[in-house]
Length: 277
Image 1 (cartoon, rainbow, N blue to C red):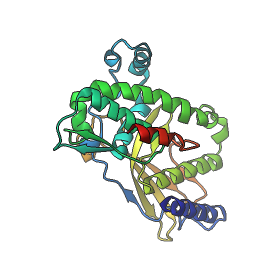
Image 2: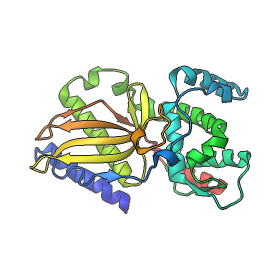
Image 3: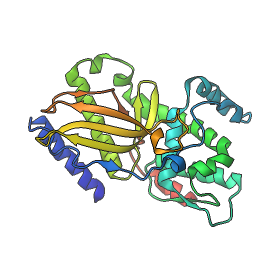
Image 4: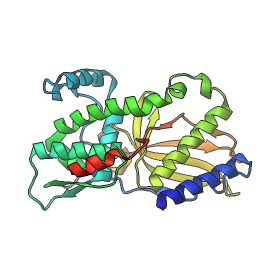
């Protein structure tokens, strides 16, 4: 029901925007999540993967590539999966690394397939604290999720991402930006953390701030995000990306973005994942 409400609200706001009535009904409120810099982020930045690949041929190849090109979407994908799908129980007996590896894998599968459900990790307080003893496990999972997201989520946007022509005019780029801002806003409203792609990098959106003109139309949207190139310890380590709207909403100035949050066509696979929990 909550998802239906969000979709209906976006349809109404899209119709108002298209008919030239401005953006008063667009993005009704700002959104602030409880994603904490020193708890919900990884303890490493976007490099030094290869030495954690432990002789596994595929991981070795992915690690080599990541050491030169990064594994940003995999890192923020893992962070999002843990934030959304893991319940930490620090008062329980600490799990073995083998069990932690299995639980992280399950959490990522739930996230990738947009499934309900949670997994438990015992003896740890949060992702950042877990990372201190499980960096190799998290880097390996980041490498694998990096490949999966590139193949399943980024490639489907190849026409607009790899070629400049389709978004070469202000009108086309504004429409594109608006589409993905709406998509990210809807994800945040549903409790998801959008994976935001820009040219050659991916970050995790954790907040959506809206400023309006005196008329009520949207003046500026600022996306707060976790950048995996940064080891975060405080709120000051979050990054922001802003989009400036014209008064009538016809033009939007800002960097091109794509929402690559996993959106499987079917959730049938969730039954198999739940049976494995």
